[in-house]
Figure 1 (tube, rainbow, N blue to C red):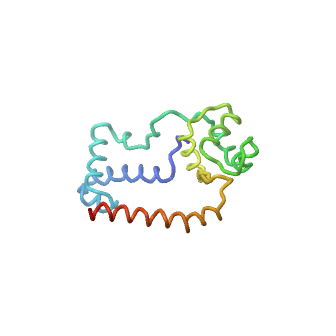
Figure 2: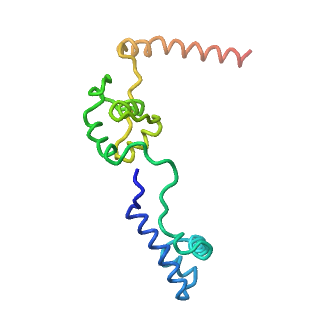
Length: 169
């Protein structure tokens, strides 16, 4: 969402830079790897990158890809909009699917998002997509149970007899 490095990437950047400084002081790669809890291969890659591209290459790089279509201000509004519930945007039921989130973003901000990307937005907001239960509203649970107890047993017995007849002939 934003290009500002997180504290975790800052920490990783500092680790890479510190590894180069230790190498310049005469530390061996295996000792640097041991000190930072990484593989020797990782240290080797950091040192090679610093040697070929300069120490600046070890700094945090913004993630590749297209910038977000929503501004930081709009992204900050998303949790409040989601909290209003789907019915506030004309949907039936209280389930936020990714398709509904995409439509809500279109309504609220005039920005179109693919539903698959909305799952990433929700994950970044510490929200989860919801999947509606796919059961018919007119289901008759009592009739289903009766069918399972009576008809299903008859069908299962019939299948066993047919299989037995095929094997024994």
